[in-house]
Length: 252
Image (cartoon, rainbow, N blue to C red; front, side, top):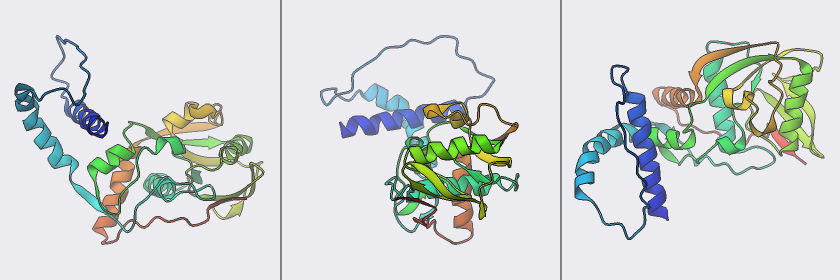
């Protein structure tokens, strides 16, 4: 089972690599599709290995690139509504997005389910980031009315906490209380600039807060690329990723 999972991951990365490398000069003119069950009883096919091996070596050389380092393992384990991986994920995307839009108030870039893999302690490779964020989701900035922000806060509290940055809140009886945005109390009569992904904004997990925004703007920045940039910048500064639980969200 474990070997099957590894092989599936490799095939996914291999396909992603070639899709990303495709030139508009070439077009598929013919394809044949067959399915084969991968089990321990399947013997190695040397002709197939010879075919994909050069591409695998090239893919491995890129996916094994060390982007930066982490002081400790970043996990999805929720503690009081937050996780070290969720805090890293939200902090990184907000930091990169604010470089072009400093007016962003806060972010919920993904749900907990969108964080697909923990990050290890020590070297963080490009492969680690692809495993964490395998999707092509884009970052989008929305101006939301206070009522729609309240709806989003209610969702975060009702679901026991989600990855956030730029705001702090407590969850009591599945309700948001003591909400601070940018260090100031949440004002329901005010509009806020909220960063999220096109997936979340499209109604993922039943979220309807972004359905009728005052305005919206696609940033032209994929979430995965924002994570890669953030990790590389830390490395260039000679520092390690050190995202920890900081009490931005508590759940009584």
